Length: 200
Ligand SMILES: [Fe+2]
Image (cartoon, rainbow, N blue to C red; front, side, top):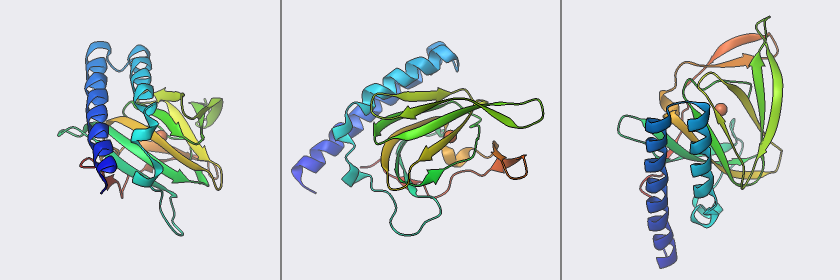
């Protein structure tokens, strides 16, 4: 590792710890509310603005033919698995179904474009799109535990962004997603294959 890379990692750790400490305090003071989420979003945007601390070389997407064309790097998580912060590094095409999180979630862009589509449940048990927003450098989206979204990355696009959750992704066993083909709600299994990156 070059001296520059070591210095960057040290600075990254410091910046991540400061952001997570602030987000813990926001949740404590504001609760899991629209106002609390708005403040968390702003704080994560501040961290994302330091894009040079999160270069593509430190967070590569997966190689080869994979089912899910994104790597998820764990860069913070409390001992009780709360306040989990990930760098997600995707190379399109990536499309998820509409899903909830069962905990709060914030996504903030570092580089590249990730389309977020928002949904509400319909009376007949389905979903209806209510809006969309491209997450890129300078933009973020946030969700209460029962709110729904899907994410989309175009084929060939590289996207690096933050995904942060009130509880670690590999502990979320009760998420639901909506299957368009048979219009059913299914269990969205806890995330596997998260790459440990807290030490770096
Ligand atoms: Fe999500």
